[in-house]
Length: 227
Image (tube, rainbow, N blue to C red; front, side, top):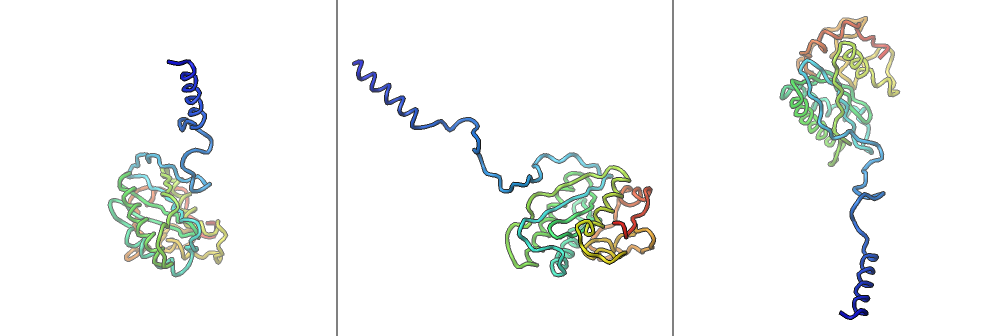
């Protein structure tokens, strides 16, 4: 082959290599863009759950939605709690409704029961919120966060935290008053007062685990004015 022709082919080959950069390998800024700057709950496999351990669950709604601490929205949410309070070996025992998130204390017969029960409850809650605001679309910003409660002290701390969370977020409550956007009225563990626990028709189920039913009381009842 003519030397000049071979030189022209090599020149064209080098031009092609320069004109079309490789798409392989890691590059800064490559890949799908993050939807939110705030890290979301990781999609890792959840650890195995023993039926004797209650769980503290947190659900956050998507940004831009109206506050959930509204009488109209709460009425829809309470109906959803009532419908999904006890299904598939899952029990909703306590809750607190905040402006942009929900705290739940639940029991489940195991990890599958927790996943299935929470999935069903989340669907009910999303539909309730959309009906309340006459909208359609995504309600929850991410999947739920679950913290397993393994000791009486952990359970007591979780109950005090959940039932008193409104005060921690700056909501005004009269001293000694129950948060009307929580399950506090169905809680019989307040100190300084005796309450008969009637759950017929309530949006929560009765605790069945020793930890959530009895064990946490070893560390004292929950003072209403300090929650």
